[in-house]
Amino acid sequence: MSSHIQVKHAKLMAAVLMIGSFIGLFGETALNMALTEIMADYLIEAGTAQWLTTGYLLVLAVFVPLSAYLMRWFTTKQLILAAIIFMLVGSFLGAIAPSFAILLLGRLIQGLGTGIFLPLMFSVVLMIFPIKKRGAVMGIVGLVITAGPALGPTIAGLIISISNWHYIFWIMIILNLLLLLLAAPKMENLSDLSRPKIDSFSLIFSTIGFGGIVFSLATLAESSFIEIIVWFPLLIGIVALLLFITRQFKMEIPMIDLRVFKHPMFALGTVLMVCNLFMILSVAILIPLYLKSVLGYAALAAGLFMLPGNAVNIVMSPVVGSSFDKVGPKIFTRIGYTLITISALIMVLVISATTPVWQIVLLLILFFLGISMTMMPAQTNAMNQLSPKMYADGSAAMNTLTQVAGALGTAIAITMFTIGQNKYIEEHAESVPLDFLAYGVHYAFIVVLIIAILSLIGSFFIKNSRQESLER
Image (cartoon, rainbow, N blue to C red):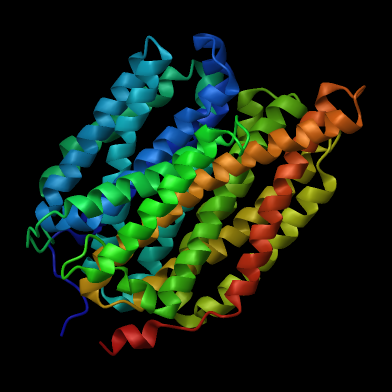
């Protein structure tokens, strides 16, 4: 029995899905570098502006769980076309936005497109490439997932320095138009269109569950946990999520088959992916903030300082992917998480209002070298333990949790940054603003360090799941 589905344009299909996902993930963080300009243009506060990122993640957290359903209801080509159109409409609204409300609406519509692209990329790549080539291809998938949000601030900084933040959206429009006109017509269908009955309760529980949790985490960045706007959506979200989980196990054809988590390497790989996305998006919002607000660099300079770390990730991800079959996940993840932990620890120790920028650049290189060695091995080893018929469910479950982790990382990073500032101001009332801003970033990196240590511990429990997949 073949381990993959034969298609005429396998590489083209993979490229379209990867480029579409990259554009979406780039959009996730690109506006982080432009928040100060957007705040000035629309006369809004930082807590309101951060909804451009958190709202995007909120849509992903609500929409991605539906992907397993969508793949059984619509053809692969239909889903790709829908994703591109959503991205085009959302980008156009962002490009012309006369008000913050229109800009936010555009971001939410963009999120729908990314919510289709991401899980579809995972499932299709696993279906159309044989298992012996999977390591190399998933290395590129890992690069897309890390490079998109990581490169966002760098590319956005360059765009802002040349023109203004609206051109971030115009560039996304051009890229999506190229996908629509040149590649989308050659897409082939891989879906098994069983068109299962849509379970309304699963849909409601999933939307309220993931939406409530992400909304609560986002609100936590500007409100206290004891306020009803924070704890009530969190409580409702947790209850709805528990109801959703219980219902999935009772259904003959569940919305997401949560039995994927009975596979230990899939469960562990998903946890490690969650930790990675948490750390990547935390760094993606904290470092631009630190470089611009504390060290006083312009958007272009701040973006360029982040480029070496991203370049290391871009170079190393395919290398790790191509050597995955020989090396296996254990060595890569243990070395990678050790590098990430060292980077986070030194960040906590050295960040101040006077830290030389070269130290930050070196630590980012170390951080992204570690990310490049952990992302692809964790996700590939996880998906390799599943049978092909469970790819859609595994992809939906993994991508949902990683997007919630992204929202969690963004929200907690800003929350800890604010707590750190307030703590420093209480203890050093006469300090200059740069000192308490720096301490806020230092304080937020403590959480990144804790997540890195937990990930490192988890890597010692990884086993090679490739053989189990081959035996199916």
